[in-house]
Image 1 (cartoon, rainbow, N blue to C red):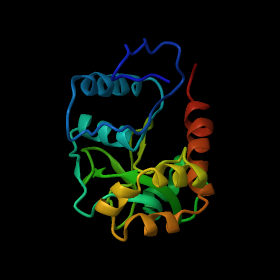
Image 2: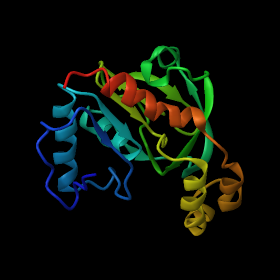
Image 3: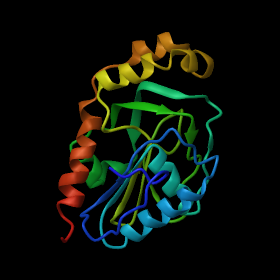
Image 4: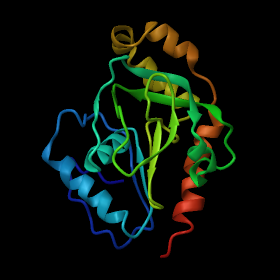
Length: 201
């Protein structure tokens, strides 16, 4: 794991794929390291698969010419449903997934519209761009495929005051929503097996 806000990003050579995770930082409050990290991800995408998750999804959207904003709906947190588009249902990232499935979320920023050249893969009423892809190498998701129900519950228990202030229904509703998300977790496996595993060394 590399923390680009506090350490130098290493050369790309040793990696078969690059994943940028969520962050407590916000793309709506730009910092110098964000441009460096975005450039690194786009350079990586020329020769290997890249997955952006939450903050990574937003940072890559901005780097590709899209917009990132505070979500007027408020903070999306807990377990929510997302819907695949026709393109999403055919994409290898969502192989084996039904059209609608639950995911773990925790974000205030969102991507209100697709970057130029991107294809919409998943959406819901709270965030119109839940997943997108660009070409064969870039895939991005607003939700957290690396997070299971236990982790989601732990994270959200620690944020009760924030949830009460910024989510419809507050912390009680968020915590009550949390349930298993096996399809969402499969998304990460699909990326490793079908994108990273299929890329040349």
